Image (cartoon, rainbow, N blue to C red; front, top):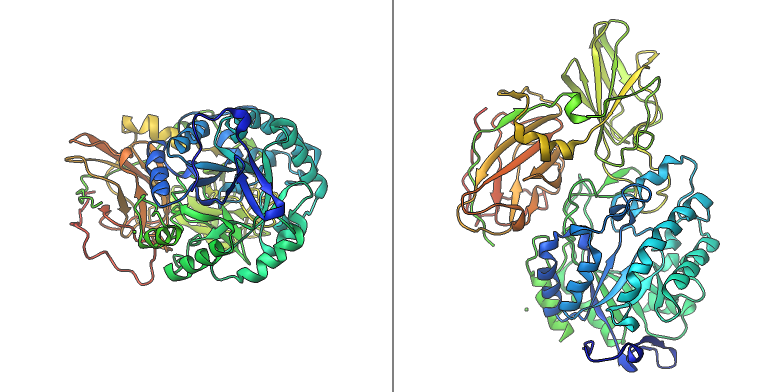
Amino acid sequence: MMTVPREQTHSTRSFVVDRENDRFLLDGAPFRYVSGSLHYFRVPRVLWADRLFKMRMSGLNTVQFYVPWNYHEPEPGVYNFNGSRDLFAFLNEASVANLLVILRPGPYICAEWDMGGLPAWLLQKPDIHLRTSDPDFLAAVDSWFKVLLPRLYPWLYHNGGNIISIQVENEYGSYRACDFGYMRHLAGLFRALLGDRILLFTTDGPEGLKCGSLQGLYTTVDFGPADNMTKIFALLRKYEPRGPLVNSEYYTGWLDYWGQNHSTRSISAVTTGLENMLRLGASVNMYMFHGGTNFGYWNGADEKGRFLPITTSYDYDAPISEAGDPTPKLFALRNVISEVPYHFIKHQRLSLIWGKGNFLCPQGPIRSILPLSFEAVKQDRGFVLYRTYLTYTVSEPTQFWVPNNGVHDRAYVMVDGVFQGVLERNMKHQLFLMGTVGAKLDILLENMGRLSFGSNSSDFKGLLEPPILGQRVLTQWLMFPLKVDKLVKWWFPLQLMKRSHPQVPSGPTFYSTTFPILGEGGDTFLFLPGWTKGQVWINGFNLGRYWTKRGPQETLYVPRPLLFSRGALNKITLLELENVPPQPQIQFLDRPILNTWPFVVPETSDRTPGSMTR
């Protein structure tokens, strides 16, 4: 396993393809990388060094990661490379860990990340064609890469950095467009901004090689343990006849969807597949080596016959668990390449909090005859509250629905503040409502993550069609783009609008409490027995979604650095969107519960159920 000599001059540093001998050369010597994927945007910055060190100690010599465009350009022309978004600090941490880097900047990355890393503000132009030669899309891409790529230039290996190769686009052959002009444009842009010496490559599944590969870019493939390695590498040779064989995504596990089982891959299958590839002399990247967490609203979604949002946990059954712990899979893989408990915190008094519209949406509502999408009101993710008032009395239960599957993605419906039920994309399409003239109809719309794979163009969010009550189209809407995270961080410490007793069913309601930690503690997992679905914040940090009722994920990973220790008070805030348990409680466990079926509480967890007074 080769390291980068610190004393080398830049002119002697090189990473190239030796086609004659089907191998890579690093500084002129034969080289094969054994790499693992780790996403800096799924791991708190203070834990980067820990995760990278564990990867290096597992025998890896390279780390591979994406750069999500939407994480760094939240608004057109506004860039953020601070804090956990400082990818250059992450590059430095990789260098400290003596790891080379394979970079995947997109612009589309998939990654089960919201909209595959593309900014939602692109959809403010409704006719835009994503991942094509559409001038509007290319203009935005060019603008972004003219900011990002020059900053990466000093980090290229031949310039003294640790980036040995850069991927262009991502699994483009799986996209319906098959626009070679678009791919040629990207390749030319990368070359213009990064020069001719950096190795540029593509990655596709076997079925995507035809549209995803491009002359001048090194072709690699991705597949998992269950696939036919011999057959797939033979197909790869049709597109890349000479040079090293490369599997850029060798799947150690798989992603999870809400409502389905937690995905796993057996240790024996993963280790056997890796061993077989290494015997062939192939270079391999294991996806994922550490999965991390979809904090906040950053999860993506798939569409496989129906809309499938991805869970908050991105554990991926990876060798390093979501909490950063080495697993038996890691030790087995390490053998092929060369083998925290937490105290239960008793929950104290819980207060119910509800902020009025002026707190949730300080700029006030947007008025429109017909409802507008998230994109039209410039709300990338999270929630928008739609409000109108009944102009007539509905005295009998009357059908309420949104045509053409127009709820994207979940709608929580209230009449005069009383929760009526949920409408859900592809799943539940109608409710029955009553109300008097002048009654307030509120619809809280939740964005569950934009499509990140396949035909992911124009996945608009919100009420995409005007709702219908009986035979009448409802008009005259007020739309509140809710600034929930700002409210939790800045206003909730003021303890606004307290109420002591939750309604059952409660509908969208905020809850908050404080708790101390005695001693130092460690990483932990938040368990919410009896809660239904919502969002959690710890000390103002958006931990992500929970969906206890649907599963499979039952716990949320809480990294230790988020918690204050030695008796200091920590604050937890929950936005429960549907139903609160009769006796609300939370628990902190020493291990995750990632699979509802069968549901088994860890026997060795040191926990005592904590009750909440209301």
